[in-house]
Image (cartoon, rainbow, N blue to C red):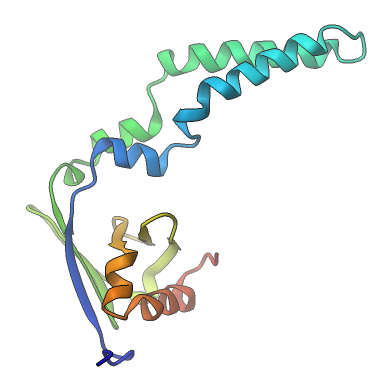
Length: 165
């Protein structure tokens, strides 16, 4: 029997490791970083061969050098964020029902109504929900689908978020 789509409730415990955090929040995919740098360098070198594209080639080569030097000067923003968000360094209980979202950690509790949902994303295996005044909430898509509430959660996200997909 399917649950009533108007009334539902789901909780799960989730621990986001630093590697998972970086994979989800880094600006670029780290697996293709060296390939992108090589392409920028090669394109810059090819641009040096023509007087019309000489300035573009110089700019691309300078950007390539910066892409190697800047990460050593400025540590990654995503990595620094994970280090500063100490509540992520432990398992956290995430919950959702038809009227609110909640997060319970060892030293804090957060609850929010659906009206404060700012943004949401359902990439890969997790749906992430951002609220205006709290942490990101994470829910496994396969478990939500298994108990038949995934569409209800997505519907509430679409209805209340200020940023639509």
